[in-house]
Each structure stands twice: as C-alpha cells, then as structure tokens.
Length: 455
Image 1 (cartoon, helix red, strand yellow):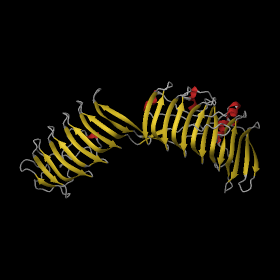
Image 2 (cartoon, helix red, strand yellow):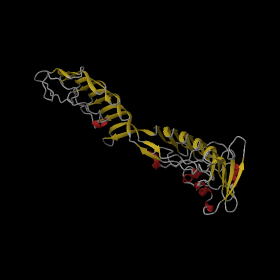
Image 3 (cartoon, rainbow, N blue to C red):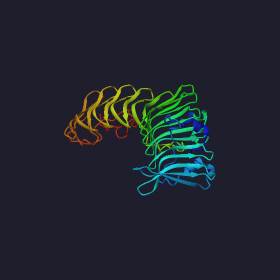
Image 4 (cartoon, helix red, strand yellow):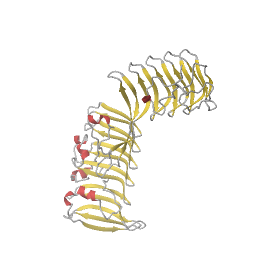
C-alpha cells in the first residue's frame, strides 16, 4: 500500500510508524490489539530501505506494489531495461528497470539467477511514483527481504493512519522495519513528517516480540503492550492524553488474567476468583508492506486460575481454595451457613489427596480419612453428631474392609452386613460435601463419594 510521497520527504528521510485505535468500547479487549503498525529503527531514510512484496520470481514485480504505488498506470504498458554487472567469484547481478509509459522509472531492482536459472530479486530494490517520488526501497537476498526497508504513506492511504493516534500527526508518514530472511525481525517504527515517532513495535522471526508502544502527538504514551513469541505476555497498559493511566491488564501466554465476581444479589457476593480467559491468537502475520496488522481470534475457553472464594446467601464464607487451569490444587476449606467448618481437604492436580475431614453442623467431626491419587486409603472413621464411632473402614489392603460397625445402629446403604468386605471404589463410603455447591469445583472432584450411612 506504499504510495507517492513528496520529494521533500525523500530528502529529509522521514519514517512511518503505526498505532492502535482505542475507544471505551474496547475496555474488555486487550489493549493494542486494534490495527496498529509496529515501529522500526530510528535510522534515516537514507540508510533504511522500504520493501516491495517478496517473490521468488524476480522477473515478475509484485502486483500489489505496482498497484499501490502506480495507481494511474494500472492499464498502461511497462517497458523493461536490463543491464548486467559481473564480479569475479560472485553470481552475476543484473539490474532491471521497469518504466511508466511516460518513460520514467517505476521500479529498479537487482536480480540473479538461481540454480534452476530462475530470476530472483537479489540486491537493491527501489520504487517511484509517476512524479518521481520514492515510494519504497530496500534490499533482497535470494528472493527475501533483508535488512532495513522503508515505505512512504499518505495520511488516508491505509485504514490504520485514519485512527488514533495517527490522525493527530502530520503526514506523509514513513514506515521503517528490519527484516531477516523475509520476516520482520527487529523494530518496526512509524514516524510523521516532522520526525515524531508514533509507534514502535518489536519482532523476532516474524512474530511480535518485546515491547509495543504508541504515543500521542503531545509526546505522552498512549499504549504499551508486551509480547513473547507472538503471544500477549505481561502488562498491557493505556493512558489518557493527559498521562492518566486508564487501563492495566495482565496476560499470560496470550490469555488475560483477571478477577471475576458473581453475586447472589446486588450487594452480596456469590463467588470471586481469578480467571485465565480464552487465548487470543493472531490469524496471520502482520503485513508491513500494506501497513496492516493481523487480527486476533479467540481460542479455547475461560479457566479458573488463582485464588477463589464463595459465600452463602447470608454472607458467610462457603469455600476457599485455589485453582490452576480449572483444576483445584492445594488446601480447600468449606463452611456451613452457620459458620461451622463443613469440610477440610486438599487436591493435587484436581485429585483429592492427603487427609480429609468432614464435620457435623454442631462442630463434631463426622468422618476422617486419607486420599491417595483420588482414592481412599488407610483407615477411615465415621462418627455420629454425638461423637460416637459409627463405622470404621480400612483401605490399606485395597479391599475396603469394614473393621467396626456398632450392631443395630449403623449400616451401609448397600445393604451389606457389618462384617462384609466392601469394594473400596464404592461411592457410599465417604460422607457428602454438605452445603458445598458442586459448581464451585470441577465436576470431576466437586463431590466426595456420598456416605448415606444411617445414624
């Protein structure tokens, strides 16, 4: 999308940079995710070189570049001049000049022949408009952009330049970027006609990497974003023109980490905890030649990730624990609505582990035992609300042997007698998580096996 620029700009070496547009409606979206070009080095136009679309076939100039830079000559015939230079021990370099119908040079490029005798761009590449103004320049190595490239844009030439903060600056704009093996690698910088930097973005191997920054015309930062190998990673911040920070978000591997709150009523919280929202992935690579940034798509689902709490409708704490990628980890505690503890236990990677204890609402222990890799192990004991032993089961041998059941008082709901050997995988050996909502933990581990023991 590079187009004509004034000869004055060519002489002064102004650089072009892109920025992101923001509005209050974007409050729920990651900052700097709107169309904003990355910024390149501060090198002047004399050292930087804007580039055309790459092609393995150097004999055919990029159609987009010709269309963008020589709009008026779309239907006109192009003449081609070719000259050859030789250097002992190096491939023969030929210079090709493509001309407008008026005879002025449109593209001048150096080419060589590959092992199959196909021509590929190799060396200097430069484009002009019909008025003789430089539109883009840079270097190729064996068909791939290499090193510094520079392109000139008029203010309304691309959508990005019509948005904030670009529309605050004076055009034409100059876009400078560094390439390695045809991919953005280094800084992409966009500056206005007065050499004011508008945006600067980092890249590594074609991927967004490092800090991305855009500025207001008054010199204050508008937005700053951090990327790691193409993913949003770290803080994303945005400021008002007066320098007041209006947004601050944190991302991990492309996923926003933020607190989420649900309510029983207008004033009473139901649950509160940290979420990793679904990942934001770029659909394609950023397009430097057309000053067009890739758009994001949402991939995956939101997951609980971090500390969590839940409350009963009366305001009493109901649950407290921690999640990692939607799986409960570490110690968890539940309470009855009257404030008495209901359950105390722990998880490892979503599975119940170590000691667990259930309580009656009067504070008396109801049962106690240990889990190993999600299953009961060792000796388990149940008590009545008066503190009398109701039943004991030994899982040490993996058989779930009932070692004690007071005659005529407590009997398992499977109908087996007190001295019956019970299957340890049976779901009626451990008490329920009384007063605990199953949606507060993953479905796979929300409910301990139901006891249903008669008391």
